Each structure stands twice: as structure tokens, then as C-alpha cells.
Length: 488
Image (cartoon, rainbow, N blue to C red; front, side):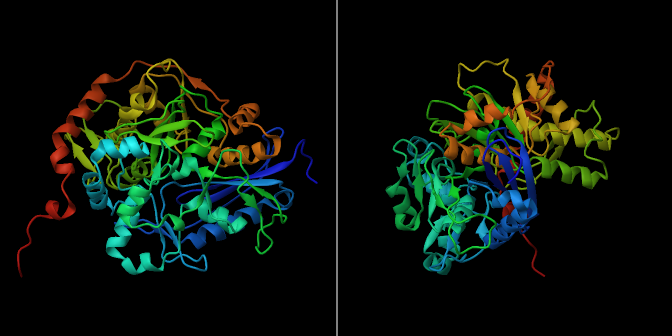
């Protein structure tokens, strides 16, 4: 056995580009082993992945963990949200999964909102107004463009559901992840039959929603993973809800996550309803709520700008009036699925470093614009903003967030918070504790606090003005941007 104080648990983060696994001591939170393996995502208008790659990556990540993974008493999967996984009668993928950042379903999203009660109907019913990232719009796109795939589909899953089912043989999900589909009614916490009927999805194809703290199943015998048969499997959850667990988040504490996508969120006791669609009214994995706003363009977009300029990502320079909206993949917040990047205010004396800083400013501006909407009205504005994700340790990201937010910023030392949150959920199965309390016991949010600086209102106002003025251009479809073609 490992020299651990308590039982070992495994937490998994299956994200857009890789799968990570941590073996954690449930008593202390110490990470005793870890592993990681990558998977591929298509480029172009669509963003798709083969779910079988996620399984292969999970197997490889666990192999890297070695003997401690064999000793684990419980496991939980945290995963990228919204992805549409379609399975045939044998449990095999009908086609590659449509991922959260596949925005081809923007027309279907608009149509669903218009034809089924408008934005207020959707917000009241599901907590969110569906955008192109939501699973319900992807299913509507698939039904319109690939009806043969829909006919072949015998089960519909989210990414974390798929891996959990490969472990247990049972189709399950949790309230945190299912709340991002667009077909789960947040008021009644059940599948919405009217919405499902509207998009032609049989509820029998959907997984059972496992309650917080309930065992989703046990590891079955016929698999190639280094778990013992009968190992407990927790419900799992979406990546943001898992990160909230990993931080031991309490109501009123804001979080900004800087990854491929950017998110801001906070735990709330009140069910969120935002008919503007800016805030998604997600559930958390405990029984509370997780109002959240998400951007499609964050670290990946800024790194792309740095690469185009031939600069290191930290090579920013201050003192510019240039504005760069880095909407390289379209955008979700603001809701501009057809947008592309936009540069305004370029001068002869503008430097490459100033352009790069403008890209950081544009990415953070989009997130901060939603922060006040995410937080409850009685939230303390002096509470430090927790900065997490792949970009959180970058000096340029930290300083940009401080300058544009005007808030103190805390950077937790713990890495892989999604996997840690999943591990805390697995540990809660064994101890009977609230998983967030487990994470607080592990002291996962510990980290340096950067003092608040004066908020840069001038830059925020300039970016908002450019965004407002450019809205008609950013809202154009790709076909309209190209203009008429001249016959040969």
C-alpha cells in the first residue's frame, strides 16, 4: 500500500485537448501520482473529437499513475461541458463529438429561442438562453444536417457521462453538467419534455441524473483500467462545477478561469435567471447554483496573437490606444458567433508589444463585463478574485486582470483544480462529507493575494465603445462579409 494517511481516490479532468488524472490522499489532499495524455480536436468551422480518444487518454493517464491508481477506493470524472456525444446500440460513437466551441449551430440557437417562447421562456425554464455552445443547439444542428446520424443514435451523452459509462456500464450524469445542455429544467430539476419534443429528442436516450453525494455505480469487471472491480464511481460533473468543488468555493467568492475558454462564476444559493443570455444559470455539483459567463476566446486566442507577432506571450508593452477584440473563434460573451478578430486604432508608432497587450485587454474586458452579473447583489466587492486556469500564473494575465478589475486577485497554488474537485467528490463518497468541505480541508485555495490597483476605466470605456460601434460588422455572417463574387 502507499504511505498515505487515508484512502486514495482518483480525480479526472477530461478537457478539450487532454485528459489528466490525479491520485489523491483523501485524508490530506496530497497528490501521490498523476498522469496526462492528449487528444485531438479538428480545426475549421467545426470543433470535433473522437470520444474513443478520451478513453484511450484516460487509460494512458492512469497507466502513468502506476500502482497508486490500483489502490484507489473511488473515482470521479470532471469534463468539458456541452459536448454532444451520440452512441449507437453497442455504445460506440455514431460520429465524432461536437464540442462546446463548435459554433456551427448558431442559426439553430437563434431559431430555437425565437420559435419556443423567446429568451425569457428559456431563462425561466432552463436558467439559460441557449447559445451555439449548448448541447440542445448541437442536437438541432445534427438533426438538420446529418439526419442519418440522428436515426442511428441510441444514447446521448456529455463528455464526462461517456467516460463514467465506460467505467460503470450505466448511463448517468449529474445536475452540474446536465444544466448546460438546454434541455434540463432548472426549476423542477428534471428533463424538459416540451423542449425535447421540440428538437425531436426521445428522453429515453438520455442518462439518469444522479443526485449529489449518490454513488453513480461501481467499476465493472470487463475493462482495461487499473481499478479493482467494485471501485466506487462518483457522479462526476462539468469542468467548471468541478473546479468550484476543487476550490471549496463559498457563495460570494468570484472566480475567473483563464483557459482555452474564459469563464467567470460564483456559487449562489439562488437559482439564476438571466433573459439577456449573458449569464448561464448552471447548477453546481452540490445542490446550489453556479451562475457563469463564458467566452470562447481566452489564452489560445492571445497566444495566437503573440505567435503572429513573433513575441513571447509575456512580451507586453503599456501605453497604447489600440483596441484588439480577439474573437478568433466567434464569441459567446458578447453573443457574436459569426465574429472574427478586430483591430482598431493602429498607428505608425504602435509597437508589437502594445498590440499584444491590447489582445489581453480585449479578452479580459469580455470576462469582466459579466462579472457583476454573475455575483449576487450582496457580494462583498473587496473579496479577492480567484484566478485559476492555464493562464493564471502568467504575469501579463495577472496584471491585466488586476488593472481592469480593480479588485485584489488571489492565485491558488493548487494546480489541476478540475481534477482536484473530482477527487474531492470521490472522497466525499467515502467520508460522507460535502466535497467542497473536503477541498477546504485540503486548503486548495491557498495562494498569494495581489493587492487591488486603481481600475483602468479609460481602457474599459474605449474597448466598450469600439465594441458598440463595430457591432454591425461583427454580427455579419461570413457570407455577407465576403461580399458578392464576380463570375469568371
